[in-house]
Length: 68
Image 1: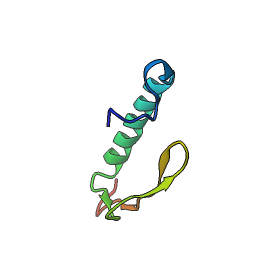
Image 2: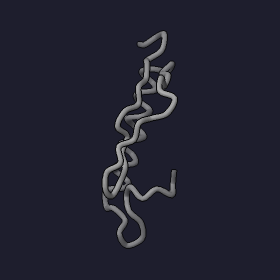
Image 3: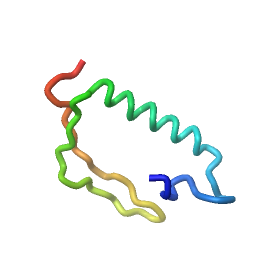
Image 4: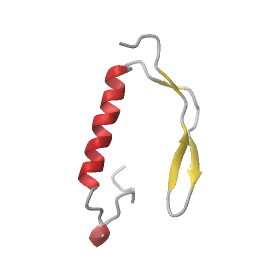
């Protein structure tokens, strides 16, 4: 979502935003390359509400039928 505030906005934009976004893309891509049949088991993720942000607390997944 491009409208989130995880890296700030405007003059408060995080200097490490580009690096964080790139790392996330590489990591998520590597997980799906390694486990192409990855399946989410939870109907809804469990979020932990912390100030000033919320974060993912639990999201159960299974690698699927095959893994390399």
